[in-house]
Length: 119
Image (cartoon, rainbow, N blue to C red):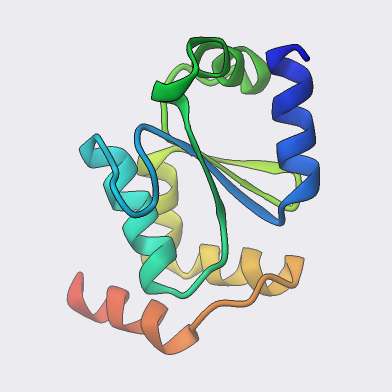
């Protein structure tokens, strides 16, 4: 199976997917840790894909999204962005709106706490 096929199937089979360095329980870079931390804190169920475990997936996801960096977040098949975009969306409330629109369960109080802590 090609990297592109694997990526497409992973995104199609999971509501929320984070292509990251490491895993959600053991991130291996600060940017991946930040995004996984936000999702974990907000109680979002997500599939983590460790790009360090597969060089073809690591390059393949960059080609697939036409986005040069990792991590990359997908929600209901839609590319959301990397660490900076997810951070901005979290702080502005846009990530909450995206989850609500797409029917993804999350802890609204936890999202509010993140914003309060960063105000």
